[in-house]
Amino acid sequence: MRGFLLPLLLFAALMSGPSVALESIAPRVVLHDETTGSLLIAKDEDKPFAPANFTKLVTAAVVFEALKAGEVTDATLYPISEHAWRTGGAPARVTTMFAAVKSFVPVGDLLRGLVVDYANDAAIALAEGLTGSEAAFTERMNAYAARIGLKDSRFANPTGYPDPRAKTTLADMLALAAHIRTSYPDRYALYSQPEFLWNKINQTNKTRFVKELPGVDGMMLAFDEADGFGALLSAGRGDRRVTVAASGYTSLADRDKDLKALIEGAFSEYGRFEIFPSGAEIGRVKAFGGNAPDVPVIAAGGAPVNLTLPTGDRSQFRLAVVYDGPVPAPIRRGAPVARLEVRVDDRLYQSVPLEAAANVERGEIRDRALDGFAEMFAGWWYRTIGSISIEDIVNLGALRGRHQG
Image 1 (spheres, rainbow, N blue to C red):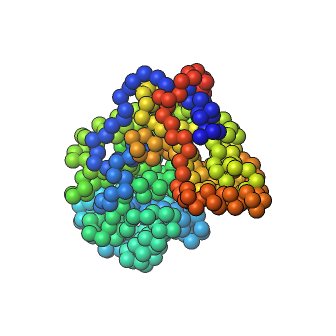
Image 2 (image 1 turned 90 degrees about the vertical axis):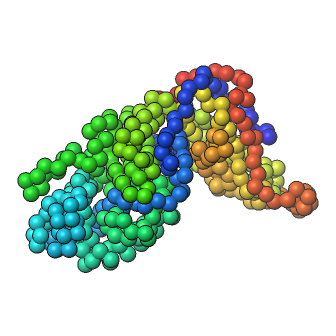
Image 3 (image 1 turned 180 degrees about the vertical axis):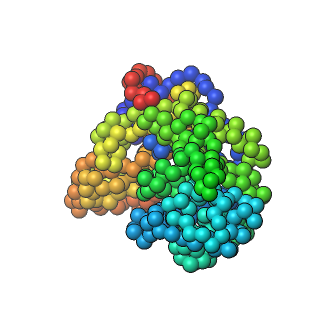
């Protein structure tokens, strides 16, 4: 279709020799480039599993919100009940910060115990202190999760202890990680704190990748008897950031080796490319009943379109402008009318919102009648313009130098 192929000549420099694509042995895995929105790997990211320690991310987020709202402060003292001590402390033989029973601990220290040490006594004490009971806090957790858009998650307690009612997905955990980083940037720094001293016991960060892998600055490792070993990690290097979430590994060794390979590969084997510069026309979509047959579209806000792509083989990548159409007139400049979809092996890799780059007014009666007559036969459907493979681009060299690193 006209208006789509010519701009795509900008893909010229993306052709290159073969390379091995990133692969993972995890049954469930998702690797996301936060800078561009590209989904480098996705496998069963919507399949539910037991959240285990990932639950503590929601526990922390609820407390972060309470602190931000002024409901409590870092200096607020919460008691360590006998329940918190027996269920989450030393007697339970679980991960603990060894808070003494019937002592009072500042919220700030409990948060460090929760985030750095994965302390279960801290999780229970925070829940009881903020809402009065684990049950009441769990209700608040689930309401919070729903409010921030976690679509397939339900939590049964603040610790992540096994419960058949509890579930989550990697897609939800990916969304939660982004939410915590953007909503509580000052609190996110806790996840990279190397160690935590409490009760004369020095405890190192349980997310050991913070020390072992350059760029990793959070967030949580997890284990469930049925669902295996998992992890949610975020890493930044230079002007790029990636987040990986995985679950279902059968051993710690497999998990650690796979995660390191994924993060290293995301930075070494992929780069950011500017596909369309700011304000570039990406395609044209059909207008219905307008004084013009179609309308040009650009990226929302006139922004450039950046993708994170392999530095090697990209032959499986395809692009298309898609929309529900035709779009009825009048159409106003800036109105959202379509999206640019990038797919690889039939999987959605990235979706970029597109907006009208011009106004299309309502046409004369004759124009509307002709369009209506055409739609009687053509129908109103989900349309795709110019799905095109990078291999189809012949005019090499147009994007040389646009690689962003």
